[in-house]
Length: 640
Image 1 (cartoon, rainbow, N blue to C red):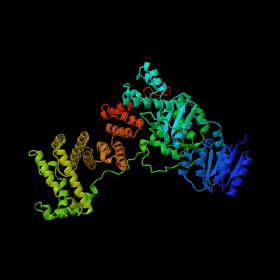
Image 2: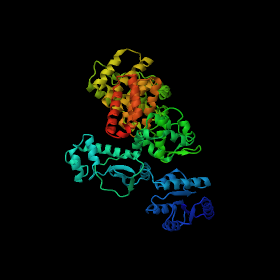
Image 3: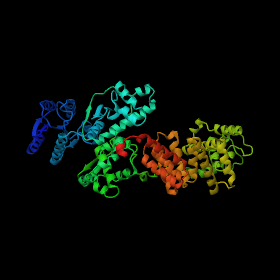
Image 4: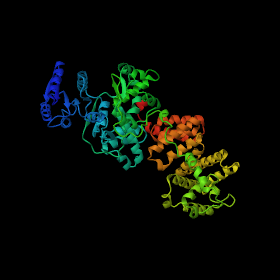
């Protein structure tokens, strides 16, 4: 049967050329010069394909497409869009959301159009599989009810699975019974009652939290069955009455996990044979979906090699070819990559992308901004300080020498004193009351108004002085931190201002920082560990623990720069020496990002370095508990 194509194009010469081309290939072509005429001819029926220019007079192409999509005959009509104006990935993505798979930018080659026509008509000749239909619903952000034959209807909101309908059905009660959550004699009673599943909590059979978790598990299993059927699914725009608890699921993440479970049914060799000569390249949809998925380390490494210039055969030529084929099948099914017949440029994100989670750890460079150091500042100001303090027979008050000179004097003397001496105290006559009075007396003269009068470099010195005062006060006012400090202070007698003194101060600051970490005082920990790092920047412990303090500090929670700095410090720590804490800290950062597979690898490395690393042990326990909660009794036929 001859396919009938409606060609809506207002450019006369181009329309005539396209009509001749399509007619010569055996298609019946109906012409429309404007949007209103296109709608009228579509209403006549019998249209198999619409080839649509976006800039039509009277009624533009987008409005034409929207009106056609509202009709039963046009809801699934294959459409090819042509445009010479609306160019770029964001327009192609918008078209995809309207159910358009082929988006041609003028000028285009005739064979490109013919290939799009053939592909569109071939796709229209057979109904989409449930998986294809579900992915299309997700991409188009539709809301409605999705039903797989023989299973409870699934409620979709803006493309995301939200809940399911259980009223009057046995599937969910039977699911609970097989998991030991519901007595079997209650299955028929509950299903025949016509009650929604919240009834289980109302009657005391399940707590609300248990019901929410079981509902999530059931919905996950229900959706995973999409991959195990070739037909029998239906989607309607009608939304039923929602049954709480609502358990929204991330579809890309679910499909990524379920994809591996069907490995035995997937003919990976045929997949690679058919597509080996094509060039995988990222599409705009890749960036819209990639951060929702926690990829396995082997998939992340494979993805890092995708560049639009390397064939699928080259990418899968060694290693686990079966697993690689599964991964590319998943990416292609979700439209995250295209398989181009020739080398092509990959798409870039069409929105502000702060960070790409799924990338190799080695790519997380240590070239990020380092913590502030004062070496250059001290050297720059050393001569000025010497001139200012030269000839002073006795300390002068701030009023006598002026505030700026007092700052210079205090700064020059700072490195000559330990924490007790800063406040005019000794270990022998120390008391908390004396410390408190000395601290407030020392900081009172640093009035905020006077700060505004200082030059930039002197103002930085004043800020550093206050930071040291705060470190000293916090250390000495805490019993545990003070004991650690006293132990270090008395461990060896060293000269002032030399390398030994720097090493001692670094130890003091490092130990103080660890104490603050244990106490949960992350801001003080960050300051103390930053001082230790400044004194000994090539120490792996200083790098790693400073990274952890920066990461845990609530003040840095919304700062992407701070998080990048923490990652960079961990990479740097690895360069100076392998300690278990580096792997543990990195593991928890990855775990917070949802990258469980990579986090597990880091925790295992930590335990190989130090079998007693408690942070790594805790991380592995959390991953195991999380997986048990997600997979217990779920996807059994997929994951065994």
